[in-house]
Image (tube, one colour):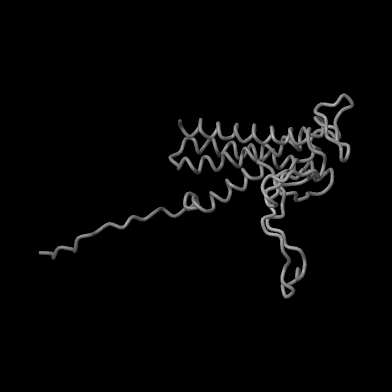
Length: 216
């Protein structure tokens, strides 16, 4: 399978998995409800956010419009760049990294663009998909669904620690979704394994040279 087909397949798999899980959670979980999957460090915990990845907020209603426009522009830019990579002699892994980033950005854009119209949003009630009374918000004003929570380490900062001494420390505190994980995996993999692909300096190959022959 060539790089183009493989990356398209990966994008579709991420989008289907991301949206299927989010729709299931929205229609089966109440806000704040959680299910412990493994001990106390792999938890499904349903929350929503109005902003970017890992629950970072981005302003009010106007900020949501700006964020959605930014996401849409980023998706078009990523799609254009990915199409260029298909035609270049680059590692397949690099192409798949950009496919993951594109899929993750698209997955969260779908939430923000359409979920406000697709679901009702009464607090602490299980949401209905396409309710007769309409959704909880308008186009581009939906909330992003987050579900994965991995509080693997729960302790406190040492008393001598600057600013946070004695406060609770949870690692990993942020709650995220499949789309967030796809973006993070793509970005981190590029930084770790493919930075040399963006270097302007040509690679130099050392070759053995014979000593100069004496001139006659």
